[in-house]
Length: 134
Ligand code: ZN
Image 1: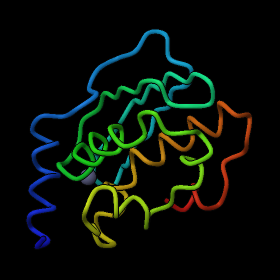
Image 2: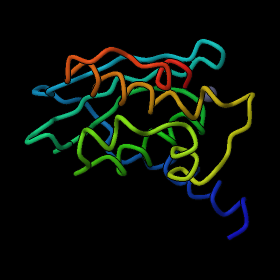
Image 3: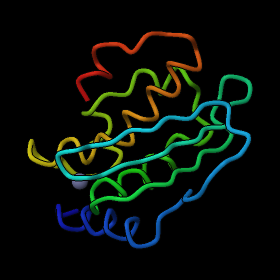
Image 4: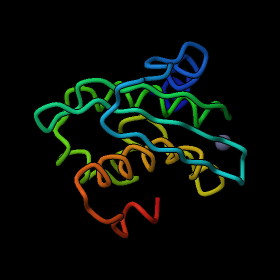
């Protein structure tokens, strides 16, 4: 598939985001922002039996940040927390279907950073270097 078809998928998610909204009874939540672009996200995860039972997000920002959040939240549903802890930016690019380039890197990684911080905090684990560098 040509690159622009992947980008089209991202734009579709931006225009009609999945998993958008608030969650009152979340197990873990996280706020993350990307000052360089003005993107921000509030993420809510419901965890049961070590797996993501449900996930929601609210936020505002560019097409890359919000499109990525929509695709990533779809992806992590049902996943084990251990699998999510191992995700890095290479895996993220595979999931969202584009490599955003250095200039837009933090737009793309915003939601992954929020997801990983929420999951690590839930597990009483420190924020590792891989997550910090996202
Ligand atoms: Zn952005």
